[in-house]
Figure 1 (spheres, protein in one colour):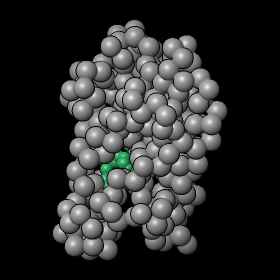
Figure 2 (cartoon, protein in one colour; figure 1 turned 90 degrees about the vertical axis):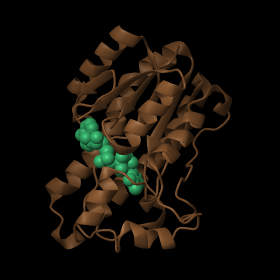
Figure 3 (tube, protein in one colour; figure 1 turned 135 degrees about the horizontal axis):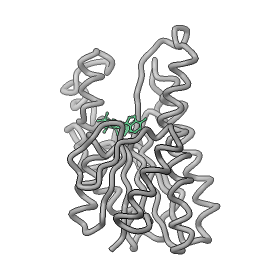
Figure 4 (cartoon, protein in one colour; figure 1 turned 135 degrees about the vertical axis):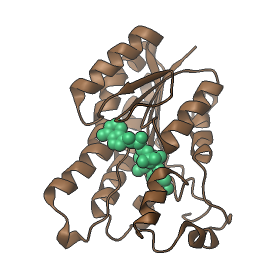
Amino acid sequence: MKTALVTGGGSGIGQAVAHRLGADGYHVATLDLHPSDAPFAHTADVTDRAQVDEALAAVREALGPVTVLVNAAGLDGFARFTDLTFETWQRVLDVNLNGVFHCVQAVLPDMLEAGWGRIVNISSSSAHSGQPFMTHYVAAKSAVNGLTKALALELGPRGITVNAVPPGFIDTPMLRRAEARERLGGTVEDHIGRTPVRRVGRPEDIAAACAFLVSDEAGYITGQILGVNGGRNT
Ligand code: NAD
């Protein structure tokens, strides 16, 4: 039985990925700033390498080596570029980009040892389209797509695939908070009309893509950016 670690597993997309992989028969551990209902839920900040390493050690002890990693922890933010403080810029890059660096580096020894691994990074459709007032977030998510492509080339010969899933408009607490703060340029309902498949995305839509990408049969797919966005970005 393989062991999967899902960051951001306490809410929204990460939580749905954790549930899906659990249903698919993986041992699943989550890592999140906030406690969650998952059986192996670890409270840690992905920007703090010591906390990540500590959580990883506990996961290995309980569930064995981790050969599947889904990086879903994320932090959005909205500010006019001229008002953006460097501290806010840095925090958003820290969570969305450096968090991926820490978690991948912490998990990689298990995958290299196994000669098999699957990494999926949840980026964002905003990296495709750009998004006003989200320069920090879009920069970080674009960098995650770039990291994904470069790392896939490096790890392909070692049996490890690395892919990114950029979601677009998925109904999670993050999206609803942005809606409540009037940051979406309309309501979620309004956006449904602008979405070719005419519905808001569900966390399970992202979980389904992740479940495929981490499977054995997806072994010839690496370095790819698989948009799951109802056709909003093609
Ligand atoms: P969410 O806010 O519901 O969940 C994000 C989770 O990440 C939370 O549980 C939060 O506690 C955790 N987290 C935040 N900072 C952390 C840190 N430093 N260390 C550990 N955990 C941390 O959001 P979501 O919509 O489920 O987002 C999941 C991922 O999908 C994020 O990377 C987000 O940027 C991305 N995304 C979401 C959408 C969308 O429409 N919902 C669109 C594009 C991208």
